[in-house]
Image 1 (cartoon, rainbow, N blue to C red):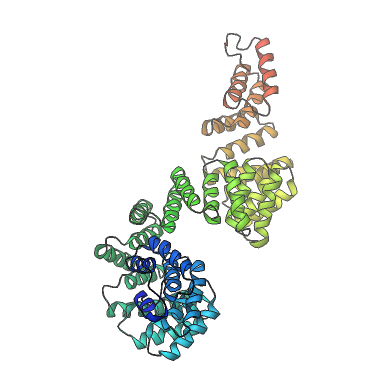
Image 2 (cartoon, rainbow, N blue to C red):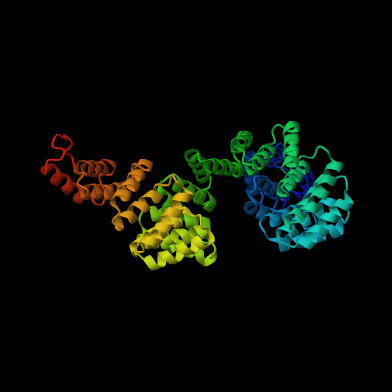
Length: 526
């Protein structure tokens, strides 16, 4: 990780300038003092004015560049730092600060070039080797990063920070054992090093040594009560162990200490989503988006949460924005496809699931949902292909089992349909769809009494199942139980006033009333 701060003290950078080269204006002096005291906004204002008044001032350009760096504004800092170097090409601190800005802006070639020259001048400066290593690491040159960090450690073995940085490289390449060894060495050098304890705790967590990780994070919290990172890292271990309430508490503590942490704001939102408290998850994801409207991850996770909450239209909006920036994210594609499926936009849903399968042919969720989308479009052959593919890998998949049974029923293969619905019932006895499928199959075979029993059981388990009530009402009429049929028809319209068969049902209700059924029923708002 690149150290995004000024690599050399401001006092050295600024006060080593030749005093005779310029006058010390009042704004310039006040700006330097404000910078040293940490009043960065005031420093920027004063030093900007001083630099405009005297563009050839080394101290004004160097100071303003450093002030912008303090705010993390490296692109704004760089022109002033470059100008300072131009004004005094041999100034050691100015060149180092310029290299720092290049590194932070990803211009690793320029940063490496400067650091190598500085190291030639001061080969025993451990910080230079550390910073050069950070640039190598960010550029993906792991071998040289390890070499340079190692040199920094050799030059200053009492500096735990260099050991921590070296350990992180090994952790990055997956050599957790070596990383743990180095982090332990860093702690032996400085037992109070918060970074060493946190890094060792993270390595233990990666290695699934959760008890050791928790002990270290708790030690940091006890020693450094304001360590928001320790609170958050503790939360991550608890979440892995399935202790969601405790994890949420730790994430919340981290946010109390550091409200600006996007990482733990996202973590607490995701934990609430995993817990099933979708309303809270949505609230936190919206906070993330308010901070960074362009965040594909925040948009995507919000969309996924909205799908879980049944807010499909809003979900589709968020997921489309997320996919504009992250078009191959299969999680968001699956979620968008699910939203379209629920919105009855079957062609669009199928397109999403097909895109998922192009990049991940083994994605079971996409395969299942594509089969369901095809079923809704009455593309029986396509639906059967994908649904049976799911069952071949996951025979206990309830959705695949139900829809495959329904396809067999559409094909008049009642024996095969019966097998699927019976299997579904054995897997999930309280799944109303199993009883519904059995009822339809028995009705198709003319087994009216059994069909009635199965459909009655269906509406007991799922009283809002209007399709089951429709089939039940028809069977009651077939058996001349007209009063029962009337009540089922009426119940459908009470549950769903826009049911797709409402006009047919209204007509049957009127006809039944004309036949003398339920004439005393005052409910006439069909």
